[in-house]
Length: 92
Image (cartoon, rainbow, N blue to C red; front, side, top):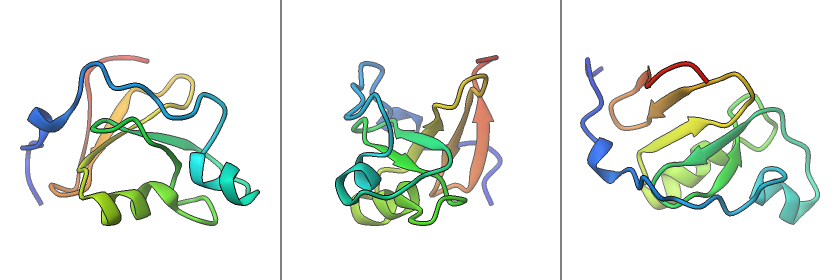
């Protein structure tokens, strides 16, 4: 496991979320989610691994976009799937 994320250069500082109301994939199939994550490469909003469909991880596997962040209120952490490391840029 890496000590630092080596993929920050792939994050888009101006990424626009593809959903403001929930997991894009769950909304499309009428499913439920627990916590939301945002892909920091393309803005895809997907559900966490505690959700039944685990769409954030599925998005990484399909797209190879390595960076996502929690968009839950009060959370400010990111996750790099490739380096398997969580990190934060400050309080959320």
